[in-house]
Image (cartoon, rainbow, N blue to C red):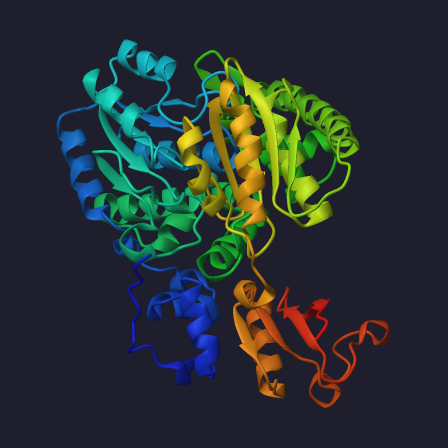
Length: 503
Ligand SMILES: [Mn+2]
């Protein structure tokens, strides 16, 4: 990918070695404003909305929609990032007098992107404009279909940029060399909300925070659920969201607190939103966030809590079933879960990957199609694998660490063969995986790594162990032999030893 490196960045400001600065640039923290957000993660250092690609076109279109009294539908994605992004966009559009509808296709029955049933729903409701959140960035066909129904489409997404973009306005922070490379879908929606608030209402970001703190709580939930790196802008959004949650808990949090007799822990909020379900054209994952009536919320939450419990139980049972299929893990794992509910595929793939730390592909079925979730350990780009297999797929996309695809079931034998072939020829050593190789570590290097780790920046380094430099950073039972080659990571502020290599 082409990177817009700002060579005027003054490393002296951050007292960082040139080697570590170039690691940050490689990781996408490649402008003065992103560096500032990384080292001073406070709300006023959130990178200005105007740096989001194509945002001014987005604002002028909104202005036109307002004049022409257009009916807008926000098109979401069926996970916590998608639900929260939907809620953020709906709320900010409401402040402009729009009464947006929303639609979240079911992953199980409709798959990803601009699915047929939703487009028909939009047309039936006399919708003029669809604005997607967290989805659609590679859906060339869906966009064409929507246009043929007379719908105008604006895509907002944060997934990797495909080789062919849909022929419409696409807002994705990864465009044009990857500004703000880490934002979740809801982070993009929050940036758009800030842009709208600034342009149409004259609000600063801190005014937006005090007028609509719930937007920051939604952003917290979606960002954590999407497992994006919690550094730079995401660290800012996380801190702002936690503060908003404690100081101005949204309605659903109040009702939930009362129900369970304590302030809900974040992971319960994430599970609660994640377990949302389609109900006709509505979705409880979105309604939980938007609903204000305590009575309605009370019954929504009651049912949802039961859903969380059921999801956890079924998920654990299916996970055990998946683990029991594993015989001898080698370079990768391919597990066929046949026709279980596909909403468990991602959960299973993540947990199996965590356990074996090798690329994991979990297959399921959706009608005539095979659907799959792929999870990869640090250093393995799952999209590289999927690119190599793309000719077998009807669709695919995602991130380096987590991706998915769909495919005609008849391609299964070929898939098995080609995955095996891919990994047989896949030779990657730690040298290729780590961010930095340092022959002679210095105390300053270790301190810098710890500082970056405490700011949420994960950096992997291949170096040599020297007791005089490392001191007692690793517990004594873990200490490598003097001079051994080691792989370590900045973790969350404490250096972690990943592996001692044979030399
Ligand atoms: Mn997302």
